[in-house]
Length: 111
Image (cartoon, rainbow, N blue to C red):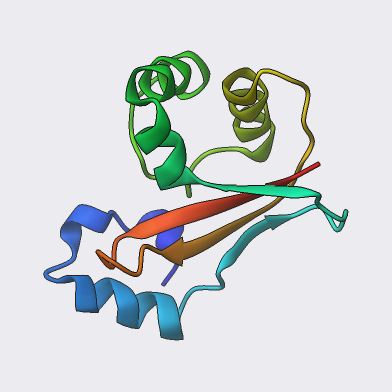
């Protein structure tokens, strides 16, 4: 089973997602092998400025979703450049979970 083919909404509980993540999924979804100098969490980008987040998601991905596993690294990099307001190079994308809610979030490593 691969998380790329599983919709989060199909899980019956947060526990199902935790079990899937722990035993089936590699948390690293992209790794360029380059060293990063900064990180940002997907849920924080939304919390800091939901309007900007949604606008840039529509621009780069054609939707306002908060599920990042199906998104291409080059498009994520372009999203981050626009969101942060300067050129960045995406070096790694890692799936993790919000420890408060148990929902999936993604960590973007960049330089």
